[in-house]
Length: 80
Image: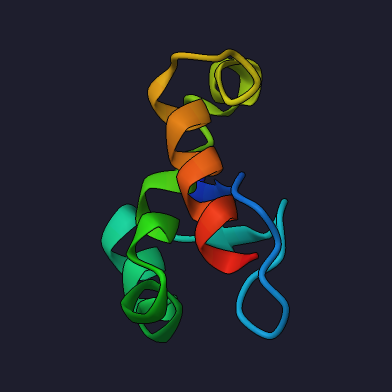
């Protein structure tokens, strides 16, 4: 059985979360693991991508106008 994982593609936030971090488990388990970070910065939730969509999402996050690009920019501006 292959377990799924999620990758955080958002900006690094010192003491909270690091870009490129990998979290094993299903979506709910990952959200529970990152509960305190998500409470502090709710947009983190939108920047966790599954192993199934990672390849496409890594491209989309760099494309202006995509949902991931917009979420990344909004979170980056919140943490500056």
